[in-house]
Picture 1 (cartoon, rainbow, N blue to C red):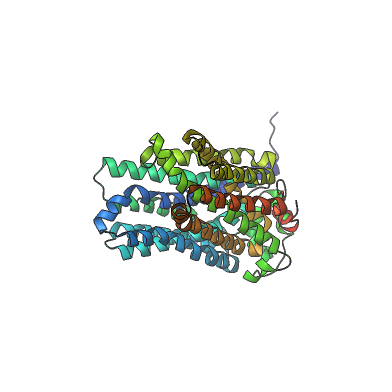
Picture 2 (picture 1 turned 90 degrees about the vertical axis):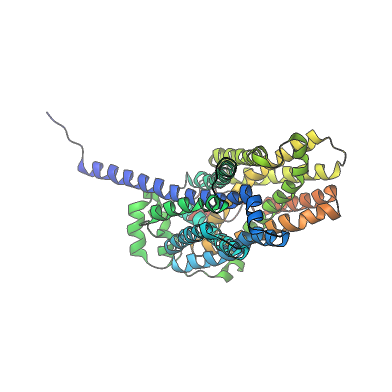
Length: 445
């Protein structure tokens, strides 16, 4: 006697398999975007000397080139966020990777500092736009029980992309006759592959619902999202978002938290990186392959630990205590003027590990504490504020090292870290296990 499975059961199993395949594809292209971001920022370091010699760059032009991508992020993050909340995630998602591919391809033909600045500016705009739309998309398509881990994986991807770029650039520059144009242009291959992989991906059902396009939202949610996600999508508000909503009575705390937390997380990072180089020189690790990869590896380890723990211990425990610890570490470095070099090195490594860990949460929180209609706008705004912190770390704190000295500079960095810790102690919510609608609606500890 033969037996057959229920056709409905076979159909449900097939639908579940299709959803898993789609999730893998979506996660892959989003993580790929972060790999590309890290790669673009990391690839220029190994060829900077050759490039400067070939283009006869003065220190003024070198500074402009270094700042171009940062300025681009400041432009691209808020504008990309506004566009994604107004016109949808999908068109902006495709635009930024297309801009990546075009701007990256232009690097093969650069013959002047002006064009190099233009290209790096365009690539910075693409990076900023990717920040504003990539993290919200990951939040909107991720299952609740995996959302934190998948978004943390994007942090691993960024550090991984930076390390891959540093290794690739160093090896190609040292052991081949390839020009610096070609080495910079290797990011084009990644960008084109991601552009092709993103073709045909759907719009976010949550954004469609917030726009009142409920039938489309239901159809796409049923096709691509977990079964329990449709119910949560239907709890979304139907209303237009605006930049002003970030500062409304309802959402100003969310905006203050994600922007201030992000700012205070990145600013001391650049300060301590500047200070640590002189320490690492005593161990033969400053500059070159060992120094660049070694420093990135410590930070990458911190991100990986956060990735492994985020769905077990929650967001708040990984956000608040590490910030207090890093503030204390920086204060010790600043106050202990005669500390032995090995002690300073250990303190620096402790800071790098834990700072990278809670920096990962700057990727996670914006997508969770803001509602769909301002999720991209808010993420883009917070990313732009964080780049102001990066600028302070890059430009102002090195001058402070020269004029004030290492001790006072580290105390300033400690004050920034402790301010972030106090802000997070006050406002950082626990969003583990909550749906996006619940997390945005219940902004509390």
